[in-house]
Image (cartoon, rainbow, N blue to C red; front, side, top):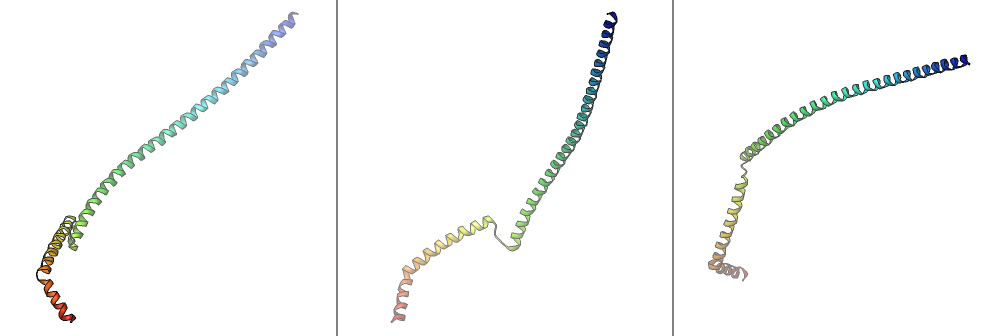
Length: 138
């Protein structure tokens, strides 16, 4: 009986050691997988960091380009206004204010002329025109 008990204990310990070694091996493989995953995550993080730096650099460049284009637009607007004034001067075209003043002056002149001609018609021209009409008509 002692031998059987001894064989059972030794076999049990050998089986336990094999199980423990298998568990240790599985843990080692899991640890290697975890380390590999950590390395992959680290590489991805570095790649994202490079991409972020590139994007930040692009944003700064776009900001500079926007500022330069805004300055160019302001200069172009100034040049356009200057050229418009030069073209108006060359063609002898009136300015907006001059156009309004001409319109008002023409309106007033037309009103005064209409009043003067109406007065002249009523005063003298009416009789002359009736005389001409009778001489022409018969």
